[in-house]
Image 1: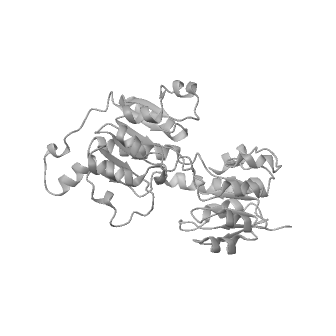
Image 2: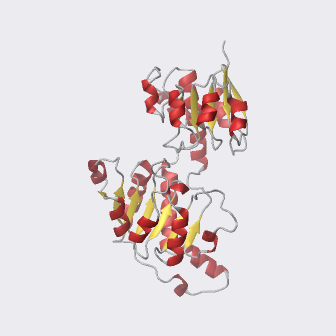
Image 3: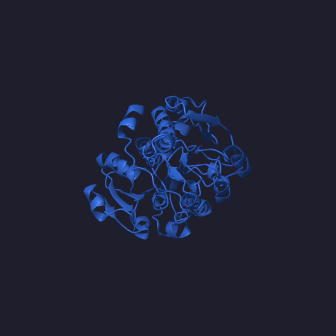
Length: 342
C-alpha cells in the first residue's frame, strides 16, 4: 500500500495531536513534522511530499516549482498569503484554507476592541491601578447608540460583527465590491464606497483579506477623509493598512485612535511609535483564538489533506478554484466526515 508523505512545514502548538488524530484513521498517511523558516528549508523538507500543511513558512513560486509530488497544500487559518496560488494552480496543486473556524472569535474580538476603546476601558484601568480615581480621565466618551460603524469587507466575520452590534444601536455601513446589494440590505447594512465609508463612519473596522489588491488599501487618502474622532479597528491583516500613514494620522490628530490586533510586521518592534500612543490599543494577533477554534482549525486543515489524498476529491475549502480548469478530481462531499470531527 502506498504511503503518502504529509509534511507540516511549521507550527506554534505544543504538539500535532489533532492532526495525528485525523490521520490515525488512514494508515497510508505518514505525518512528518518540520519547523521551516526559509524557502531552502521548505524545499528540503517538502520536495517529495504528497501534501503540505503550512502556517507561516514561505511557499513561494520557487518553492512550489521544486515540489515533485505535491497534490494539496492546506493552511492553518483563513489567509493564504504565504502561498503563491498562481504557481500552485499551474502545478495542479489544490490549496485549501479554513475560512470558517474563527468567525465568532474574530467578530467578538473586534467588538471587544470597539467597546474597550469607545468606553476607554484600558485608559480607566491603567489610571485606577496607578492609584488615582477620577472619571474625567476618560473624557470624552460618546454614546454608542446612533453612531456609525463602517465595515471594510462584508464577508462571514463582519456579517457576524454586524449581528452583534445591532442591539447596541449602531448604524452599519460597509464597503465590499464583491457582495451583492441584496445581501447587505437583508442584514440591514448600506453598501457604500470606501471614500464614503471613511467620510461617514465614527468607527471603522477592517475585515479585508490580504491580497495584492488590498495591500495598503487604507492609507493617507482615506485618513484625510475620516472624522477627527474616528477610530480604526483592524483584526484582519496588518498590511491592509498603510502603517506609516496610520501613525502619522494618529500623531497629527487626523483620526482619534486605533485598536489593532494585527500589524505590518509581527511581533511589534520595541521602538515602534504605536507603543507610546495613548490613543492606541494593541493585542498580539489573538482575535482568531479560542481553545475550540484552534482544534477546529487544525482538524479541518488536516482533513483537507484527507479529502484529496484518500478520497480523491477537491478539498472542502478549496482556495484556488481555478485549479479545476487543469485538474480533474471528484467534487467535494465531506459533510459527514467534517461533522464527525468538530
